[in-house]
Length: 317
Image (tube, rainbow, N blue to C red; front, side, top):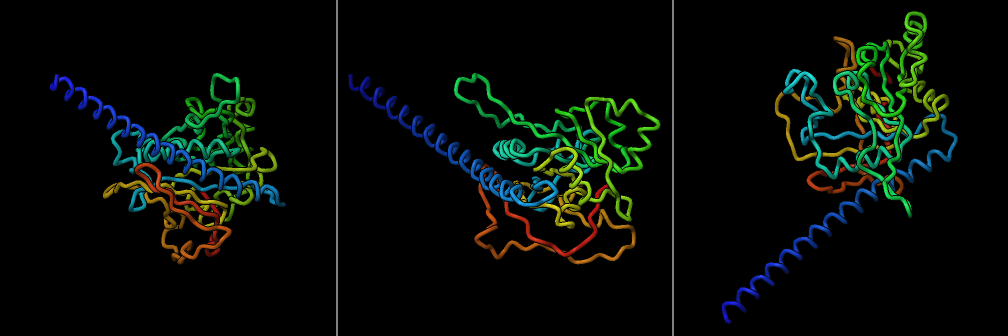
C-alpha cells in the first residue's frame, strides 16, 4: 500500500510538473504573439497616419533579417546549390517568420529586386498570418501584390515561365525596356500573371526610386509597400531615404565566410568612385519615433520610424 501511495504521489507530481511546463510554454507563446501584434499595431498606426496626409507615394516599410555581423545571405557561390541565396538560407526563427507574414498582411505590396526574383523565385505572399471572423471555418489570409524592380527586364524575362509569385506581379522596368517588349513581345502585355510598369531612370541608368514609388501609388493603387531585399535594394532605399519604417530581425548567428552584406553602398558605386560617409542614428529616441528592440523567440527585432541620412543618389539595379 505504501508503495502504491508513493507511486501515485510521484505520478501526481510528474503531471503537475508537466502541466506547469505546458502552462509556461503557453505563456511564452502568448507573450510572443502579443509582441508580434504590438509591432504590427505600431506599423499600422504609422501607415495610417502617413496615408492620411498628402503623400503621392506609398508608405514604405523596409524589412530584412540579418546575422549578428550584418549578413543577410550566403553568396550563391558559397551556397549548397545553385538556387540557394538569401531567401533560401534560413536566418530567423519561426516566430520571426510569422512576423514577416503578419507584416505582409498589412501592406498593399511586397517588393524585391530582380536578382532576388531570378535566384530565389520567391512566392511573395502571406501564408502564416490569417484571421477568421465569426462563423468562418477557415482563416482568411490578406495578400499583398508582388512587385519586382528589374530595370532592363533581364531577370524577369529569364524566369517568367516558372514564376511562383501569388497574385499579379508588378514588374517595374525602364520606359525603354517596356517599349522594347511592346514591339518585340506584345503577347506579354496581355498575360494576366504580370503587369509591366514603365518608370524613369536616373543618370546611372538605374530606376529612379522616387518616380517608381509614385507610379506604384498612382497607377497600381499601392498605398503601403513592404520592401524585403536583396542587398542592393535595401541599400538604395536607405541611401535615398525612401522608406518610412524600418524593421530588422537580428538572428543569433554569424556568417564568417562567403556572406552578403545587408547594406553595401559600394555595390552601387561605379569602379574607382570616391565613397562618401553616411549614417542614420536612432540612439536618441523621441516620443514620436522611439526605436524599440523586441525579443521574439530566439531573435531580436529592431523597428523604428524613418530618420534621414545624408543625401545620396537614389537608384537600384
